[in-house]
Amino acid sequence: MTLPLLSLGLALLVGTAHAQVQSDQVPFSSTGGTTPTDIWTALSARFGDRVLKDVQPFSKPCFANASSAECASIQKLYQNEKARTAQAAGYTWGQWETCQDTGDQCLLDFAVPTDPAATEAGPDSCARGSIPDYFIDVRGPDDIIAAFEFAKETGIPLVVKNTGHDFKGRSSGPNSLALWTHNLKDISYNPAFVAEGCTDAYPGVTAGAGVQFFEAFQFAEENNITLVGGSDATVGLTGGFTMGGGHGVLSPVLGLGVDRVVRLRPDSGRQGSDAKALLVAPVQDRNPRRKIPHSKCLSERGPLLRAPWWYVLASSFSFLLTYPTPFQAAAEPSASSSKPPSSPPPAAPVQVVVVTWAAKSASQTKALWNLIGEHVIEWADAGWGGYSMPELALFVTQRLTKDEAAKSMAPLLAQAETMKEAGVDGAMAMVMEFPSFLPFFTSFMTDAGGNAGAGKVGYSVSLTSRLVPRASFATPDSRTALVDALMAASAVPAPDAPLMIIQITAPTAARPADLAPGRTSVTPAWRDAVYHVTSMGMWNWNATKEEIMGVYDRTSRLMDNVRKVTPDAAYLNEADVYEPNHEASFWGDHYPELATIKMKYDPDRLLDCWQCVGWNPDSERYTCYL
Image (cartoon, rainbow, N blue to C red; front, side):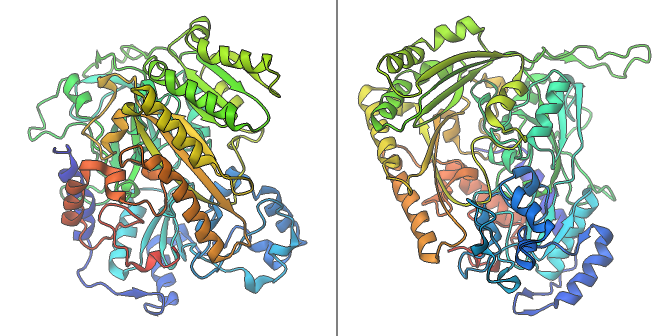
């Protein structure tokens, strides 16, 4: 299988960046070579005030003076996602600020941030851990290009950080240079967007790499449009979410985030004689004068490849909105008309069905998961997405009216009634309608401050996941095997019990025209998946190295129960840090071609990250992993 635009895109992206620098590379080592003073001088000369010179660990003020007003502010905001993602050195999950191998860290007690035990050792106990030494506040293409040149010249490892919402540590690394893309906040809506090389216009949104979901969803609300997004308000719309695939409750109908992409703007080098920004659109034709009909444009869009060494280069993405109902774009806009030739359908109402209860009960959880397993193919094919935890089921659709939604979910609502009649504590069911996606998202996915409502941040986590295919729901026996595996994977007593979530967010009901199968690097298993199952363990600031390794091992072994009854497939953004057979799990049969292209255009691994395509596990940047 050939992945369109791959060779062209990587040749222009990585190859051009390599060609712009001198072949003599100054080796970099944390123990020798180029001195920090030389690096700061060179960075300042090249980037000016976009070099962030005093980036310190998020919690450092509390180690300097635990009774200061600055520390009080840090303690108050310690579990606040928006506060963390707005800081260059702020990470959602604590361990990626630390060096897990050596214990170097600067963390507070995430459960009680005011606990003095975490800071009583004083300023000298606050270590940088795996926070990059150098940060560039990226404000445009020239900064990205110059950073690649600088990394090539000096050998300093590059990492890319947008929000720091990363379960695998790819946005941090000791002794590295970080490209902080958080401030690339431009977002625009064009009701008549035409991708390069195409003739038809569609409603589209173009967003910078720093736009987060709480901003994107508010923008969509203001423009009466719908965007595919995740469940966490502070995750970036582009970057890792899109390049990894990107899933949410609307994905069963609208596809993965990457399926909606019609253009990306990678900033990596000169195109032709002097241009420094280039576009990768659905079709790059040898004859630039030949226009491509809309059917081919749509079938060949989505040329993104997730070796995360790709997304670092893209400063903006353009997304297709709603269903593609093409209209011909005028060759030149009419001076007498202020309206586009057409406009998208309005954002659709959102129907929500919720069933929940209060007390933990393995028997009630198993009954719920048996019921969902029995009906989920029918529901997902009808356009329902959603989530289930041991005491909760939440389903969402834009395809039905409120009455139709209640009828469709009758088996689930009936089970809730049975629980209520049996006196199950807190058992309840709700059928709700929201006028658009944002009110639903605000009500169910965020807290009063607009942060993710599913839980706080600042703690350290071990996440594992699995994509579960249709075959697992084909027969009573296969469904029983799956539910038994899920129950076994979550059957650990508190306080070590993992947080398991069944996510019905695969593109099960998306129309072929809305997808890009074979055109992206996401594992083909997404196209046959029904569940994306995640399980999370956690630890606090004072965990020992042995205890941390124990959490990683336990969460992975628990997920082995599900691995045994499903194929090798996992969503790389939310996968086990030590995912077994990760090449097959993350990319499936795409991997050999991806690896070949990676080595052709980036043989020096200028762009490298943990368990990414063609990665170098011996790199110094990984010394803090266990």
